[in-house]
Image (cartoon, rainbow, N blue to C red):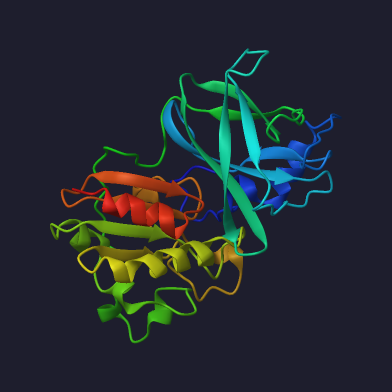
Length: 290
């Protein structure tokens, strides 16, 4: 649905099981060896890929629709540009847990040189590839990206409510993440980490873990602002259909959740992480800030 539809409900991006099963329709045969189950195939988890430098997220899915958590399995991905019949390039996948000990993805940093319908196959090093699966690369990102000015928007703070449970579904909220409104944080002259996540309503179940990872890093950066933006404004709703997306999600043009952005002291986006980020990645991004 369009990001301006304030009544929409996020679908947990492409890593939802329904999307994995839809991709399965393309997986008509093929087998692998050397560690990857012969019925597995890759599913691109990003909802916002575009031409240029990107952080690709890929899950491995079995033919029965189950995600394969495989932290010890070395995986490479062959990427096919639009119309290409041979791989355009190959990248290594780095595993990260999205739901600890339950579900994980492989990430890879790469550059897409053209938009259109790309394809991807997975294989163990030196092994045969899986079935090739298509995914789309747009001309431009929808969400803000590196080098963009961070959109300024007001968000709720702890000082406006009697209890943090009124503005966050995090069962163990860190008060530091609700001290400042996002607009105040961006105007403070200090770097800011903003987390868009809804632990209580996240269909992909990754919002809580990604927020926990950010909370783990925060104590090491006392001069950085940390702001959690809950995806929905009426978190006391009794049905998912009643949920209303907060203004900040629309202003930031987010096509999915969760997201983490690192903004430098000037208000410029220095890093963005769609869907998942491990503490080491976030820590590295913060340490690279001027």
